Length: 132
Image 1: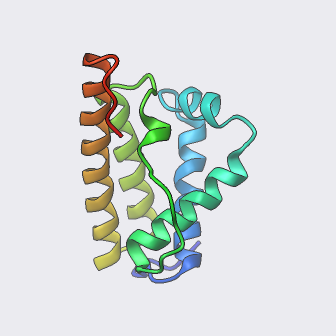
Image 2: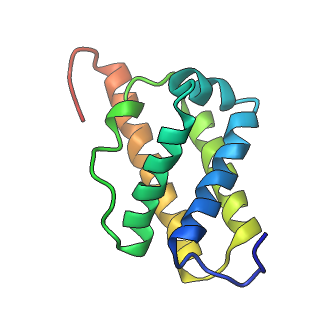
């Protein structure tokens, strides 16, 4: 475990964040079945993708290519799921990091959750229309 006071500054920090967060998600009574059903035995690939995503977003090291929303478009989730996802993410940040990048990670996660939630609701309310 890292000493408190450290910010998210390098890939090892990203890996700690991602691994710690998804360990919580995989055990969470509300979220585990959604993630485990979707990802199944592909967790190592998912974690690698999440390392690259957060490395790109937080460290400005462009290692992620792709579109993050489409895999989430048809998940059976509502606002409660997004709130729990954010709660676990914030908890993970607070347990391991503090600083400017840690705060940025929370801000970015919140914006992403809001955007994904709005898009999912739109899709649910407008079957047949595509928004990706």
